[in-house]
Length: 204
Image (cartoon, rainbow, N blue to C red; front, side, top):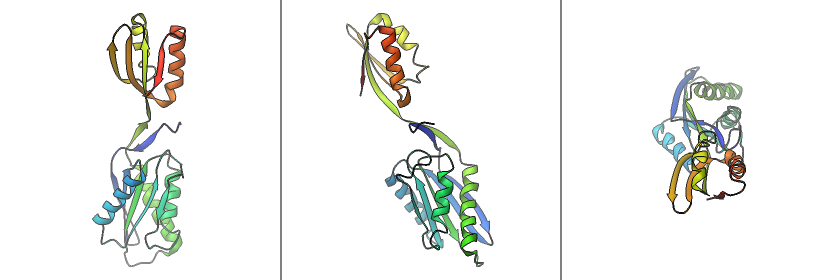
């Protein structure tokens, strides 16, 4: 897997579990930035303002990335909620994700070990049914080609997953397009082979 293409949550997703009468309501969202993650966390805190705890964890960026990861026990014993939630998420092969677990205490104490297991299970159970989609990072490119090569270049669109080609005609054909970042260098090399270096290629 490249860091320019990875699974992310397709939409908000929620599941409820119960452990010794405590209810754990787990809500998941696609959050590509820390700002969107904070906004999502605040929405869930407002929705479940009467919960005993709204613990959360986030992984911003590619799956397993810790550069913008975060977590909170929100009043639970240190390390009993946020850390096991984050650990579970880092091994889930999903990026750009924030999870909030809203807990309603059921009157039976779980102990720290029991809470770690309960929060881990809440996240695992929810991620097991989470619908995902693929995030692809695109590069915008501008190419200039002679008319005689247009058909051959257009035949490369499918191979390199090119989208949104915009053509402008003058003495040459100017094409602005987008393609996945990981295909960019190979596409440029293919164009050079096709035209013996006669195609102008510029990243935008």
